[in-house]
Length: 345
Image (tube, rainbow, N blue to C red; front, side, top):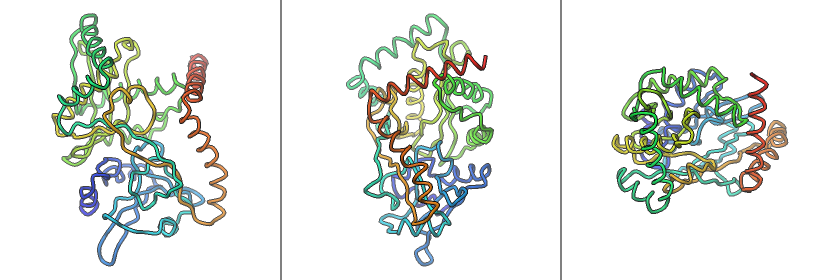
């Protein structure tokens, strides 16, 4: 693990907790499919490739569908044959959707997408100055709504890096409600994901930890977020709020408080992850880049995978890139979510 850590620390592009050994080890304790390929140049270890191996030789990132950073952690300027790598790993194809920049796995045909970030290297005060200049209306209205929330509901408190499980389960309950309300698949219907989050929350070291923070009003939880961090990067993962307080924009209030506490604890960047969300556009200071695609061998399994997955992925990318199509799809999902909620009741 020390060599993995050394390679991760040597290049800022790997400064993401989803690429940390602790994350792979924790998921591996819950998922039999997890593997790690160790790459050597002579006697020297030059890379680690964490992945999941599924039936028919289908390879995926560790905890595929949950992670915002994927790929190898490797020595600078490492040159490898990507197809040979996946073949040596017993894979017919490796599919990814958040491959970080500069990967030997990345090819010119892979689709690139922005991943919004909040830069806190200079501290929280310069960040608020940036918001005043670039998202002044949002910043001022969020502060005004926070004051209104306190006038109408009570004193606000923000707790950061919470160890207790009770507020975590409150947050996951809000997130489940959000998934159902918006027509999305409830990730926390899978017990292993719930247990993964619980184990990550209990993991605490200088270089890797789970971070739960919550906003309360008179001791009543209003909004929260669970993510994981390295020494200097916190990833946005599961934000949610109590919809009874929706008119106060509790998610924005929580994110500003989280950024302040994160900056004070030494966090230099909050990676909010790929995906078009209004709150990300309002809070971001810049963007990283991630890629979506696959590396495949010449095999029947890879051909079958192409027929099943690639057209669907391209259709989704077309919808995501077109604001009108995206709005229509989002509206349809929310209508389905309302219908599903009524049927369940």
